[in-house]
Image 1 (cartoon, rainbow, N blue to C red):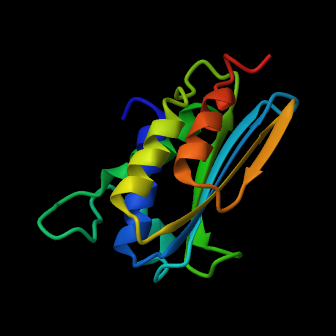
Image 2 (image 1 turned 30 degrees about the vertical axis):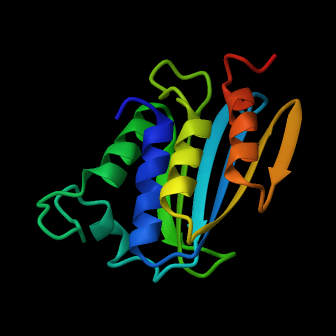
Length: 165
């Protein structure tokens, strides 16, 4: 995938397939620590298998598919940019948590992409899910818990590190 927003859609799809009715998305851009962090928590059924198995590119829970490349590719992208991907149980919602972080200024860091559009697409195609969105950067903090997706989408564009001054 070409940018982090596409991986966000994949993580949301995984949460919805796991029966999530509530998904928390947190994005933090921190220039002081040179870190970009995206965390997706849900209240679904949790991980379908042990974490190391879920990150295996040949493991999938989707019928008719032979591979499950999304999370394993994201982990490789994060590691290439000086970060990593962790998966486990959500401490806030009880389902699954996927947390990815990478160095903000690393040459191999994925672009953030159009996070706003990805969030709107996810919300429109999954009206049964309550999305809770928050994000922060060095010069701003905008907790948008329970915000309508269209409102949240307007603010995602400010998270592009190239636009943050």
